[in-house]
Amino acid sequence: MQRFPFSTPPRIGEAVEVAPGILWARMPLPYRLDHVNVYFIADAGGWAIFDAGLAQEGCREAWESLLAGSLAGASFTRLIVTHAHPDHIGLAGWLCEKLNIPLLTSLGSYLGCLKISLDPGAMEQQIYQEFYRAHGMAEDVAAAVRSLGHGYLRLVSPLPRTFQRIMHGDTLVIGGRNFDVLTGEGHAHEQVMLHSRDDGIFFAADEVLTKITPNIGVWSVEPDGNPLSRYLRSLRKITEEIDDQALVLPGHHLPFHGLHGRCEELAIHHRERCDRIVEACRDRPRSVAELVPPLFPHVEDVHQLGFAFDEVHAHVNYLIDLGELEQIDVDGIRKCISSEAQVTR
Ligand SMILES: [Zn+2]
Image (cartoon, rainbow, N blue to C red):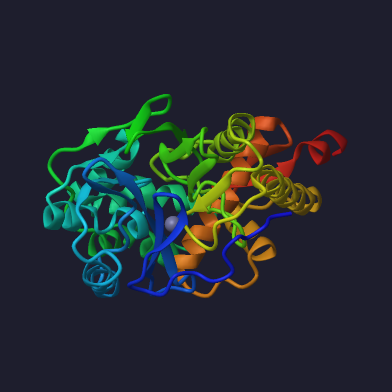
């Protein structure tokens, strides 16, 4: 069970102390998930900022009111960005320029963002259309999903031309405090997390969230990838490295205690999803697209459908690697069948 030491989040434009020398603020998002957390860590000569928010007016205004309100007159030393998703990296370029501070992030985050920025139309290549078609997605849906790269650019300001790389195993000294740098996989490439062992504080980014499970999806650029296996490995590593009593400061929702229990819940959630997929593939072969409705009955738009498809695909690739599913060709569509059903046929 998780415990939540702060029952209400800070108001937009307000920063509150969650531990000595650590502030928490929120940026608004125009989605059902309507906010992202940003943090400030006391550094020599000012505050290090942890995550930036989305490159949209609402977040820019929230920053302006923070800088004129709770953080009026404050100095800033650097911006640490956790991963390349727009709600976290979106305003990195804007903030670094405005505050004249360097960007610190992982190579995976920097290059991941740069890849889309330099080549937003890449997803329209025929090879990706074919990838979605072969897994059963309707042509028009596939075309819409593939155009999402252009949407990304509207949510991300151009990155600074240089950055400071941080990677798993580094120690980052912030204001005299030592933070171990960890990176997690599955939700994003090389997602940065920070851990102060001495103070029992863990900046978890989106790797461990309460309320929602981080989206784990197959990326069409790596069609046979197994992000779920990597994600589960990251959860195990986090459980080994970090004390259950640590204060967890996540990318969304409230800070909490009870890290190990939450990691276990997340692992169980994915195993249950796997079981439902294997079950659905027992009676007849099903494509990834055919597995989406039983797992995600409430998908509302193309954007959500793309996420749901990639998420189901992650479970499918994981189950194929485990030998629990096999893929067969049915009239040019790749369909999954449970290995057990295969044996007994
Ligand atoms: Zn996020």
